Image (tube, rainbow, N blue to C red; front, side):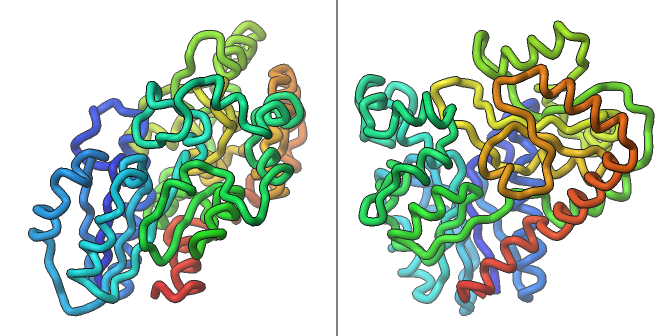
Length: 368
């Protein structure tokens, strides 16, 4: 069985220093390669931009091999898909029994974007309309920008909550997403499952091979991207820096050996659900988070509900940046606790590589 994929954040279209350059390669691309091989097939990856999906779709399809088997198509959800519903029909004309899987990331953005921010969501025209959503005040004041907690409090079983899900009207066999709330909302329209967005088996094993005990030269490493001035994320790193807490972040590093060394040399892997804009909902996709434990470095995180519910990650209060320092110090003072946390998180990371996550889900819903 062959697997075809469309991964708009993967390939030569990205600048060499783009923060997400390795994101798709180390996760979906390698994982789908492995799964296809196990199924006796080949993974054909189509790196594309949003626009290329529509403008060049038919030409690209004509160039792909068309064996008699019923392949799996894995397609990253993007805003262009909210405008054009024809692509699944094109696929099923070529492969009538193919399975179409859409995976989402940042699908919650549709509730917070105007056309000025991103075209394609076409729901809200102004910031005032966004802020007039019936749950918005609680989202800010009660749930501290946690869209998961907000959704659980305000969603209605007979209504779609997320604009991104409401706008997705493709004929698909499965929708997957790292967000429990979005998966629940999508289940009102599609077969839907949550996955842990981790690195592939191949990368996890390579990280484990490269990892070795090293002197802890920095307090933390955080693989988040840059933040706008004055944002919560910016204030976090400003507070840490002013208090002598050395954190590596926004590194734009894509050499795996260098990345492993950075993690090995850090006391903790600092997780944050903050975005680079304060009006956007907090989130946790996870790929970079689970590298830390594979390098002997425990992951800590703020009180984002989805992470808290895992039960294996030490938690600090969101916006209480001093607690990051205190939590790091308490962990490093207790060597047994520190090592126990690393071992438990490492076990979780290896048991939830993306290959294993996708294989489990695909079998569960009869994709394979």
